[in-house]
Amino acid sequence: MADDTTATGRTVRLVLNRQQLELVDRTVARGVAQDRTALVHLALAEYAVLAAAGGLPR
Image 1 (cartoon, rainbow, N blue to C red):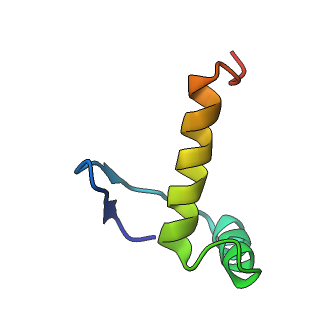
Image 2 (tube, helix red, strand yellow; image 1 turned 180 degrees about the vertical axis):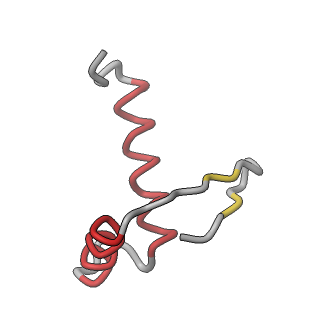
């Protein structure tokens, strides 16, 4: 996956194996997000909400 700079100027680099990338592509194909980058943004946003609510496992 390509790097993507967000509005905050932070860059995230993901290294995915073939199986993970296929899962990302199938999820995008189902219409969950417009493209890989949008799916990663969505996942990070959902993670941030969960983390802020204290819902992450320790």
